[in-house]
Image (tube, rainbow, N blue to C red; front, side):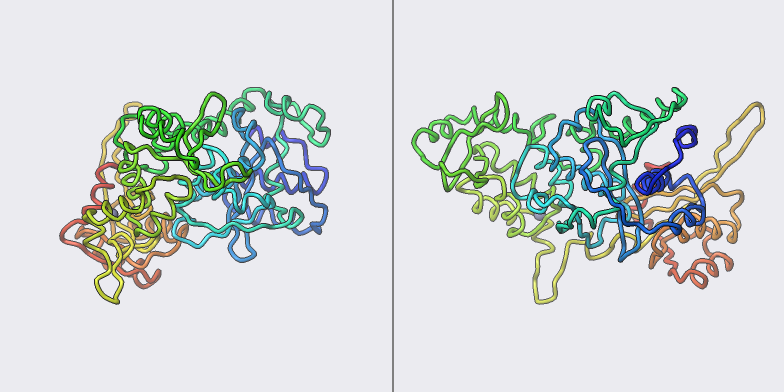
Length: 464
Ligand SMILES: [Zn+2]
């Protein structure tokens, strides 16, 4: 709070807009912010728009129709500050998708960027980072669209929110930037501000292991190695003597310098022409592992999409054949493949979509002693089994009415209304008041279950 309070008051349009974006970053902590901010947004006509790309902040706004739903902005860390412009723009997309995964997953997403190259960056395989991010982005399957700078106002403003003091990063990157004004903040508060922003994201994207936590990558059966790491591929390639020999004899195989000290065997149909038409040659030892890995990562997609995805960046003469064989042997794929004109999808898609269903349960009571006083507390857990979003609401008693109110306050009033609410046969869930609140007031169907749903159960176990 100290950091926000110690900011210099905005003096012009750009700074005001930036300020609004800044406080929205903490939107979860701040009730009734739309009411409070309303006068700030009404008094001005927005027309003075700054469109420079920012090399120290990321910014994005999520809109539904013409209405902004959520804002995202944060500083880049020192490693990320060295990224190319296109990488920084892409990073904005990656982080926004990740931050708002719970409202974005499963919806149709159009990404608008004023960086024209980004609209085809995903296929041009610019760097190893881009390739890694691509996997994170693919899950959401967005389309990229070009929007001219002057139209990209909100996201642009968010990417250059002036902060309260010069961080070392800002000093280094924009020594003469007179547009930014810095007040003299309380030093402790300033450190905390940076700690919050940077520590939660710092190097997440540059550490495959950490990124795994977010994306739940399937395992690659080579301990501790990330299969798309250039070094991993290089090691596999150098062990493949046949491949290394083939470079000398096959004109379409070339050694390509992909970064300092690192060359990989690549395949190109137009050797000698300056273009992006090249793919990494997969050594034999990696072929099956990678097909498997991609197949799991893309959650058992069909052969066509698996081929398309892998072929964007990878080459092996037997790739098609191996994909056919491995997918043909995959149990879930065979079980759920289309048998008639009625299409059957894997169960995950067929049964549930995000926000469709919630599972609720009561846990506790726990007894704790605080300063000699014995306290007892119980909680209501609410889980979306698709996104694994969990909410835990403390309950004062187990009366049907109270539990119903907590469910309404914690979930129904904050997230998209589910169609079904699955619960076990506890007394509080079959009480008349509970049914009234859930079914009549909110239109959500109550689904009692005798056999506990194993999926929700597993999540519950972990929560408990
Ligand atoms: Zn499969």
